[in-house]
Image (tube, rainbow, N blue to C red):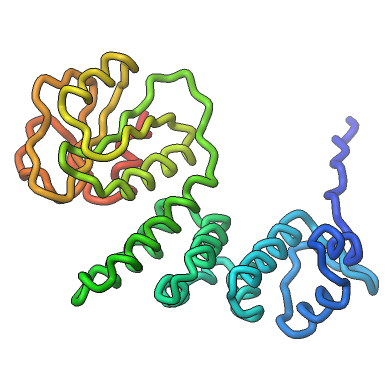
Length: 266
């Protein structure tokens, strides 16, 4: 029986990669010499070969440097899984280098899923800015929120004809970022979701359900809120700390991961 032939992986020379990056070859050599860039492609002979993952990491490194990060830190963030930590992200935000913060988050999302990035990076960073003296950090919170949303928007939405999950903030609630994260986390599971935005009145929510035939509605509230009345939907999920403990048949996930598991089960 003939064995299937596997096509060799595409690789590029150092000169070709330097041209792709718009860099002098001497800069690429200096990066290797100074920072010991770990390549994923097996190396044979005296000339370096780069695979797709290596080129992507170099592009991330170049982008982080262009946004103001030091080259050594940029190399660590771009080539090492989990390289971006909360302290590095907060440093960029506190310096109001929001493009750098966005690039750090994008690099982290390459190696981690949305739930991990949200729980290990975004939430701790937001919590650090919302602690004592938070009234003097409003600009930083908004900047970080913008960076998180911008990084999440780079992940494409799935193409699905299935009835979507509707995501909305309760009437009066304008903190939309947790639902932005949920929308993209569901996209990673090929689950279609339609985000309606902040402060959606009950009447508008009922109209949206009727128009879309949604099979699930997720309502977020960080402030005291009452569950919507006369909302006929197969599944209602109440997320956030604002809901009463007793909410009838509505589901109450405590974390982003629990919400994703609930909406993707079956």
